[in-house]
Amino acid sequence: MLNLKIGTLCFLASISLLSNDTFATETFLIKNTLQEKCLDVSGYSGGKGQNVQLYHCDGYSDQRWYFADQFGNPVSIDIVESNSSFGANFYNLRNVKSNLCLDISGHGGWQNDNAKIWTCESNTDQLWRAEWTSYHGNMILKNGKRLNILDVAGTSGNSGNNVQLWGYDDNPDQYWYFSDIKNN
Image 1 (cartoon, rainbow, N blue to C red):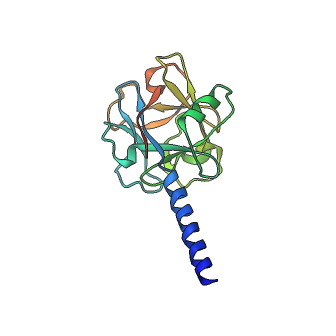
Image 2: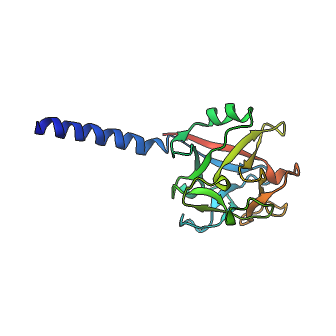
Image 3: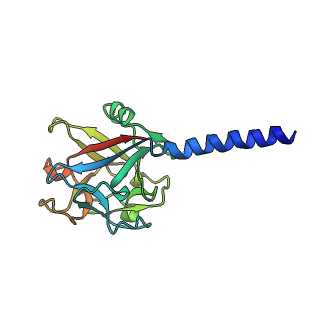
């Protein structure tokens, strides 16, 4: 009986390890089209409440993201892309370094609300839909709260520029694409 329990525990541990690894099966950089800079967690600490900004792409884990459903299960870009055409599915965008969610300060989802990372909750201000556009095949990232768009503050697109919500205005600071997709 003891061998069966140990074998079962080892089997369950291996399943647990596989499921922990699955969050990183498909990670990516999110680049803005304005200056080809990356969506970045400022300060590299990855701590709860850290600001999200635009920054030169260095590929560190604070710039890597993945999609997850409301239960934290990873979702592939292919599924996100196929569901975006229906305009229905929203997902969490989780940061690889911290496993925290891309979040909007204050839960309002209003224009000019700041982007940060925060503990993943079931709030709509942490839900995002990638919508591919005719703008060179890039996408906009629409927030689930009020359907405002992830936007770079100002229009320069320089490293350190803040990321926020804004109404859709068809400027390059609102267009994004996935880069350096890694299947681990």
